[in-house]
Amino acid sequence: MQFSEDRISHIAHRILDKLWGDDLADFPDEARALNAIKDSLTDYFSVADEIDAIVRKKLSSYSQAKVPGSREWEVLYRKFYREEAEKKNW
Image (cartoon, rainbow, N blue to C red; front, top):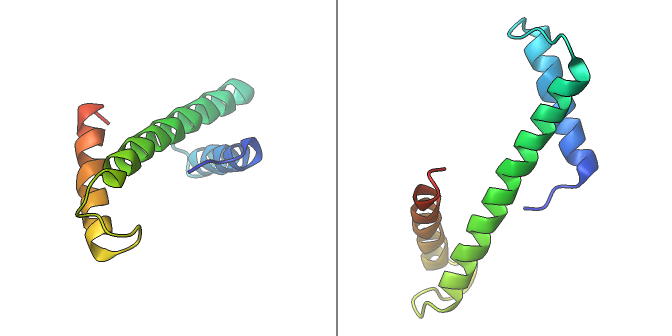
């Protein structure tokens, strides 16, 4: 799932505000902390997109996977997604 830079920035600000507001973390350099959160989110979403692409490619060659969104397709998608995530230690 592709997220725009604005959306990632919004999520990062929400995370930073929540950590600070709940007194879970104190940030001596807020800009640096915000950039670290943005980088982490970007990395997370890029791995998720990579796994999704691998799984969809695998499913497209699978004769059992009828139509995206069908019950069989969804079951196989989840199974293959877990397998690929485990391969990446994710």
